[in-house]
Length: 204
Ligand SMILES: *[C@@H]1O[C@H](CO)[C@@H](O)[C@H](O)[C@H]1NC(C)=O
Ligand SMILES: *[C@@H]1O[C@H](CO)[C@@H](O)[C@H](O)[C@H]1NC(C)=O
Image (cartoon, rainbow, N blue to C red; front, side, top):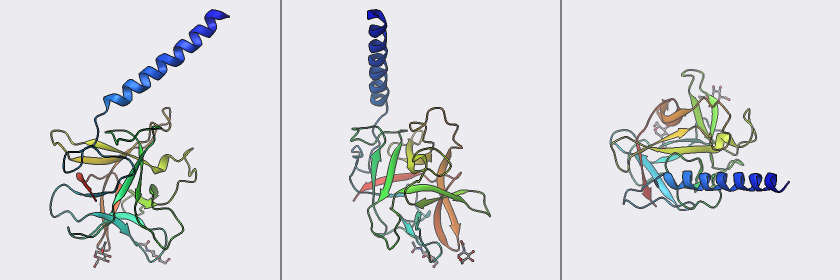
């Protein structure tokens, strides 16, 4: 009895140590001034290269709710900042390749929240659009559609891409993971999976 208890408590603590060690391994995501991204702080997301649209913003795709995640047509002062909320409890730093909720700091006329969510598949391109709203357990258990990760681009400090692959929420799930990229529809720059747009984060 004693030894069983000991084994159980030992495995708990080994697991805890491993979890903490794994978290510490991921480098912080850096903003354009080289500082670590903080949870709950406003940042603009913008393309790392010129001539590929402006800051990320809310897009009225079709005169109806919800708003979609997209970009301004040109670089400039417009657009809405976002905040990050890491899935890992108590985490205050946004780390590479970890899952977090991304939410626009903006109010809209829609009842939906402004959190990013993997939405419907575009019929023309078969790409999954990024929409705003809270995941209500849509098809996948839990709020997995609301969690995105930031991956460092190889050999480019401070340049990242955004990916949907929420394995922290469900380790055994086989997600059809995808990288976020632009999808131009009726001259509107929407965001959808299965593309790629290198981005930087600018503190608002
Ligand atoms: C916009 O809404 C109209 C009316 O509901 C619909 O016919 C049209 O297909 C929609 N367009 C897009 C791009 O979703
Ligand atoms: C970009 O331009 C198109 C076409 O003029 C317009 O419909 C769209 O609303 C513009 N996007 C933004 C974010 O202003």
